[in-house]
Length: 225
Length: 117
Image (cartoon, rainbow over all chains, first blue to last red; front, side):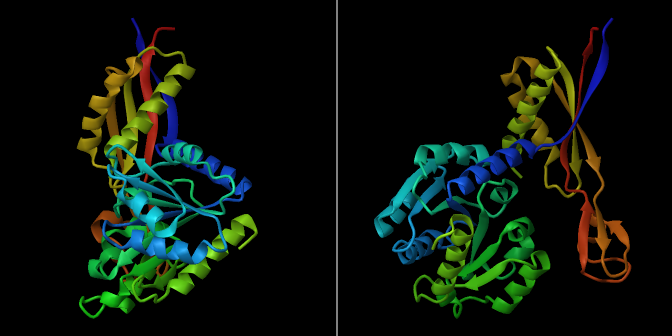
């Protein structure tokens, strides 16, 4: 009669993804391409702000954008139309996030040779993308003023994994009960290191500071900018 | 969380370990889930029972879940307490200078297979 034998594994479920992410990050670093993963909830204004930002950067840097969406190609088209830089739309088939393997495949298809900077615009979602390392060098997120200053408390993981937190749509602050000081305090409870930059793509507030931050990160990887 | 996405990670891993050990059929897989890892057990099992049919070796593999207690550490009074009951605020001194010691795990612990040898 057969008996049951136990094979011990003791492995983190995310290990395979973390390994793929590290591989991709190393590969990009060796090509001197900086990749920045951009996350937020839907409607935070990240496509608009990114377009503006890219227009500020493109005279100095070769920039590419990969947009992840469940179905439409609107965002990639929007950025391409507004900036003229190369963009790729990734349809992830309805998943709530993009992982390192998907990103790796997309990067292969996109072809990053000659680029200094690639933005990957993740799915609009404050929960799932935070769990999956995409292989990006830096993680950044948008929190828009209409969403409220309590969001860091509601979505703690997202706010803890980001290197830069952009408070967007600052031009609307008079219409909403958004307390920047409270938001900052809530973020600091979770993340002591992240840079926080309030911006408005409409008025241009904070955009120079944002461009400066991005350029410094690119310099870190590519040695130029 | 995103139980379906991680189910495929588990499936891939179990298949790999089975192949490495020349196993034809896996009876069960045990996963360890921390109390505050945000994985929903019932959903994970539902996803697993659907996805396991995709591979011959896992076709009848039962998923077993072991829960790991979440514990938070207080930097001010050096105390440890149960995260699920008290959250970020230390029940001993009221401090919020605390961090999670454990309870965020999501591990594949082991698989059980027939031992014909």
